[in-house]
Structures are given as structure tokens and as C-alpha cells.
Length: 65
Image (cartoon, rainbow, N blue to C red):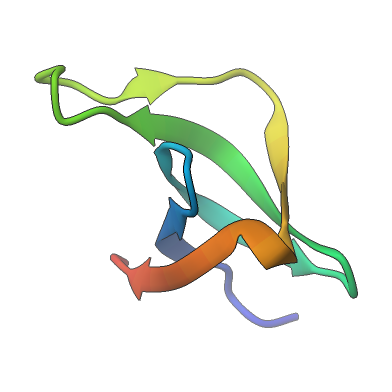
């Protein structure tokens, strides 16, 4: 099994989300341990569970770890 990558996902008309890229499906990306990055806040906001981001909303990824 490949090691999972920590990524920052920039979403069209949405927040930036950082987490562990767990899966890529035909329609979405799945991130574990997601955190919402808000430039107005000093610290990222943690979200419980996982998030599923529709592929058509993703502008680009940044590999952060």
C-alpha cells in the first residue's frame, strides 16, 4: 500500500482544505483528518471524520508532506 500524502486542496469558490489524501475516485477526492485553512484565523479549524471533495471543484493541489 502506498503511503498517503498530506495535501492542501484549493477549491473553486470554497475554502482551502488540508488533510491526508486517502482516495481518488472518478468523481471525488477523499481527505482524512481534514483542516479548513482560513486566512482570517491563526490556526486551521479541524473537522471530524473525512471530507469528499468533488473533482470539478478542485483548482489545484499542494503537496505539504
